[in-house]
Image (cartoon, rainbow over the protein chains, first blue to last red):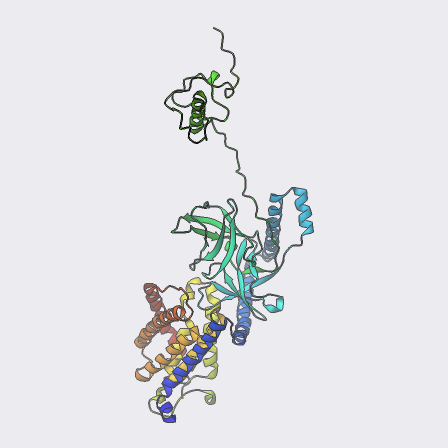
Length: 361
Length: 176
């Protein structure tokens, strides 16, 4: 046996290494559990270096910018950017509240309801082999982060935590094909599932072809997935196509609008209502419909009923009058149908508006 | 420092095996993994550069020892797996095979040839991507796509980077 192992030493080493890894892989897939210890070691080894690189990069860039450009302006810009992010979040919350209730009531609701608790984190690296769809953030279980927590920016949702380690966590971005979140459209309240397309975009799945979704319409989180609190912006629809069974809806994710360096992890979510779709900016004046062809009556003595504004309305009115002339009761079985070829004899007074007096010659 | 060098001197074939300091053997793969983790954040096109794979090919090729190649590939692959959200072993198995085959080729051919390095880097990149796709479909049941033309183009790019990279790594060899 030893002779064989020595003779085939190389092949034995290969087979042994493959077998060990296959068993490891099989255990993880079968038990749906990860080998946490090895991952903790690897993350703990890489994160400090990545953080060091990141701080070195930002320090050196910051130094040159501070030195060569304007020190005060940069500091001020940082501060203003932070304020802007905070105000955007507050504004989002306030706007959604104000859209659904009266101002005073919304303020009262705002005061009553505690805001969701979030923690800021910085992206320090990409996960290998994911093409940037899984990233590492510099906050972990030590900061209260757990797997499954939602991650957002002031502009929209970004992804969710898939693994949390003591000093870092892995964040699955919305662009990953395995990502899924419940969403709802703003205007037509269409429910769907947000998924990554795998090539940097996102789509909304499970929307029937019969449902109405418009280009430019906003999607918000619906809260159905119990990961993302309801009411966070997801993105706008950039393309809608009818598919074989369900619609193909491509969405431009709003969370990535300002780049992706700093994110917020939601520690305690706070559901918010979906804001109503904005009213049109201007009211558009519409002319009344033109008179029906063959209608020779003078406009001053029009016999149109109040509701008969379309050709269909006029046809319905004509059919009703014919029925009344022929003493026909619509809806009764065995009575046949009135003769629609006969013209209605008179105009019922009840349907005619009060006519002005005829002009005197 | 020669005490810390790793190499073989027990047979004429293995005497051609290159020696490296332990610092290089640990530090370069770590740097390659860090490169893959960190750099594509700012240069997204560099995400297609498989630095850990190139380092695996280089060390396996230069050490000319299949068991060493297996161990080296397995360690780098498992380290990559640990940082990804996939089960441990996916990159590990693929890079174990790459390490083994690269070392086997190194035993039979002159590993210092730039042409051989170019061809091997090209071949192993394609093999790596294809075998990873096979494993992802067969073992994990993932519906990942494989685009041969894109993979071939990326293999050419990786091979083009591999030649100067291997030349730089040659400087880290311990000379006797």
